[in-house]
Length: 322
Image 1 (tube, rainbow, N blue to C red):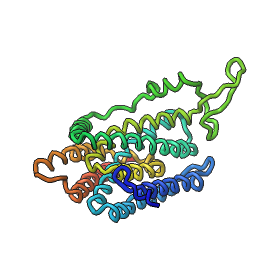
Image 2: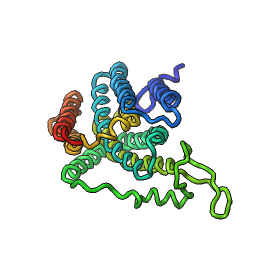
Image 3: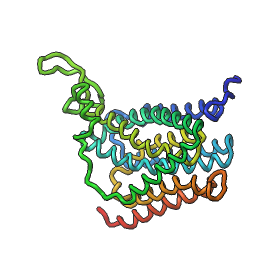
Image 4: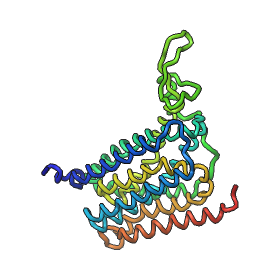
């Protein structure tokens, strides 16, 4: 059993296996118990599931504290809160994709389940690559920091545009070149065999598979912001990956809870802008103050305060919205 104590990416192997076992258990429970065929998830169900996922994500900080110390635990919580908030943008885009592709609500949970499974793998690849870069070239953190500051400033001053025209999305156009796409929903199937114009049976993608591909691509785009943000909070691969995955695991439940009331978070964009600038600026503030790192407890407090203010202002300003 000595192999379990082998250090892999900054943490002992048994810690990674424990985390992966927990994730697999949650996914199995989600697929086997919560994913009933053609079942439309209610707001009450999604709120309950979201609360469970958030509680588990926060509780995991206790495991991090026991194994890696209070500093790592505070960094994990900060990263978890940041990732959870950035997921709101994912929810907005997912809602647009489902609306454009005409995916009924009772089938959306299936697309989201496999979408999140793909995200877990993609984030692992991106975080592994990022950890390797940071370990070899520590100046990469400064590039991440400048990128976040620029992104936050651009977001702060960007104008509200109309909804994007997804019919021009190159992922959708490229997918249609690879294989024919059915014009109608085929139950929960991603691929079906249907006769073409000449009567020959051909494999056809359903709108569910196209929506899944678009969601996966959208997450890669969002990861360009979120992964550098976490690396400026901590460079511990275990903390970076676990905080990311726990934030993503509850995305499916969070989608069904929030997709109908996204308009209530109209001012959260400004809080996210300030937060990205703060996260990027921390490394420069620490250098100016002569700190080895920005105090993680202070970082967590400021993060919660910024997001709390954004949520509070949003709810107050939109309380009369339909």
